[in-house]
Length: 247
Ligand code: NAP
Image 1 (cartoon, protein in one colour):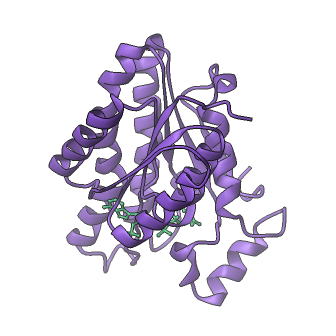
Image 2 (spheres, rainbow, N blue to C red; image 1 turned 135 degrees about the vertical axis):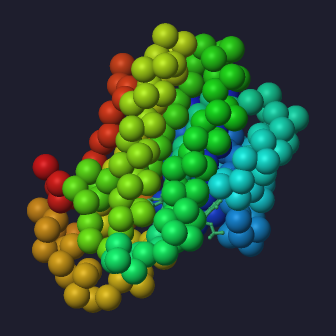
């Protein structure tokens, strides 16, 4: 089904992991997909896969934590596409440590990418969406933003902050036909979780009623749905994709 045919999407951190799966799911749905990415190599690979689906793709080297880079990236998109209809704020990083050992730098870096980056990208796309009186924004939060997690005070704060951002912006722009939602993945198999020690993996898995870790595609399917016309009556929500880990 090509429900997103003619739509233009921007996915941050679309080069690998969940971001790449989201790019491919939106492209499969018929959308043209641009991505902001740090690593040109992985971005190029995603772009190639998107174009193989018969839609257009743009890859831009943008660090979402830097407002000037976000502005420049949006200008480049605007030259080719005249704005975007869909924004997925997916770029995210971790710098884990117990709070007693966490440095201000690790706090700032994580908040800078995960939360401030979403703020910059949202600002950059909203004017165009308001003019078109249609838009979809999806923020990739995390279940830990709702339930907390030791050793991740910076990451958890950024993910809880994203849920707050989602709700505030959803209320501000609802009258313009724009929905803003968050997805909250649980334990998903990507580079981010690959390095977790076996003990931590086992502990996560023991908390998942569906008895398996998630795949990037599990998250991408929900993001896709939230971007369709059919999801037009859903806004301001933070929906878990976690095999039932948090109920
Ligand atoms: P990942 O494999 O580490 O991928 C993260 C992506 O974000 C990479 O493409 C990375 O680019 C990009 N990125 C990082 N910093 C950036 C920046 N400053 N500007 C632009 N792009 C940047 O992680 P993932 O597991 O796919 O996670 C994707 C999102 O899901 C994150 O927000 C994460 O917090 C969230 N999440 C993941 C899980 C999980 O279990 N995996 C659970 C809950 C939530 P480079 O390739 O250049 O580094």
